[in-house]
Length: 109
Image (cartoon, rainbow, N blue to C red; front, side, top):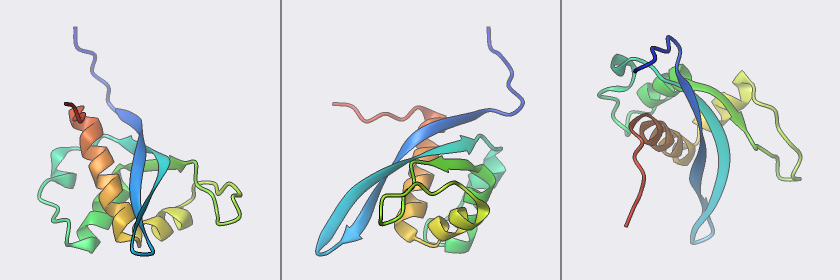
């Protein structure tokens, strides 16, 4: 039996490769996503930051495990969402986590 959920959502750990020095440092946080109709995310070119941000505003319901440089927790807000969406490496990680979550795309052997 398939249950119809009018407002499906899910939470995933988002792995972000943050540029640091001559390489990257992997950091993580949790994001809660709303599942949206295909029209919202289909055809969004990853190099079109305005459209990626618009799509992420539609799917992103919350973020957890965010801290400042002193290690103090930062609560989710519209302001922090916009701050995060300004970073291309965060946008790419969020889109990847969303698609992985809706398709159950798991890396394997």
